[in-house]
Amino acid sequence: MWSGVIPAVTTKFTADGALDHKEMERCFDLQMKAGCDGLIVCGSLGEGPMLSHDERIAVLKTAQAVAGGKPVLLTVSEAGSREACALARKAAQAGASGLMVVPSPIYHTDPRETVSALRAVAAAGDLPVMIYSNRVAYRVDVTPEMMEELASDARFVAIKESSDDIRRTTEIINRLGSRYAVLTGVDNLALEALAVGAVGWVAGLVCAFPAETVAVYRLMKAGRIQEALAVYRWFRPLLDLDVSTYLVQNIKLAEAIAIGSTEHVRAPRMPLAGERRIQVEAIIRQALASKQPLPAAA
Image 1 (cartoon, rainbow, N blue to C red):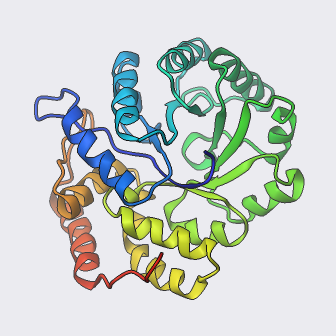
Image 2 (image 1 turned 90 degrees about the vertical axis):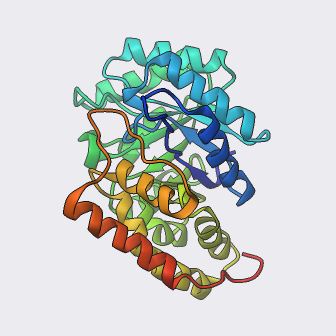
């Protein structure tokens, strides 16, 4: 459950802003057919925070219907612990396989508060938890020391490591061994993280390029590093699109071009326009034009 390629899928909307469950089913199914190992819905840097709790549970159920028994995790990222605990309980009632939990994105908790808040959400949901550590986006660093403090609670099982420092993966493993499954959460550090011991990849551009993402992961795990590196070097300009304030719009534009999906976003976001759109579209089309066949049995 806590390894492999796990897409942080985009939420699909109709032109009038309603949830587009039919398009989500189609896109999520493409991830499953490509060999992805689960799904994470309602991402915290995506459009999860723009959804009501009921909408998030509805997206969760759509993903569950498509996942074929593979794990489906719901992201919990709320300003207050009370709201986070309420959502965790709803996810458990809806049969979520687990939670990906972010410390408060609004109030920047100190270490004592961070540990307490994570413990409260885990207890409320009573589900396996992936701790999402992203000090760049949220200004709260869930450090290896804090992970060690949380290790006494068996519900904490995995780390989405997004510190933007490749040394952190090694630091977690050196300090805690195999206590946590460490998954990289930064698309353009994925190969590097897998090379030093990460067991999974919570991926973004996988939404538009699932086969290529799965190929990099499987080649690395098979020790076929040079083949993985060749795919990764081709992939890098696309993966860089995930590390952006506009990651949702970037990925949805990639999905529109590569798999014929939609670009509808929920306000205040708007689809890319102007020079930014020209630049991103050029990256996507150049990648498609230069794509080579993937290595056999990847």
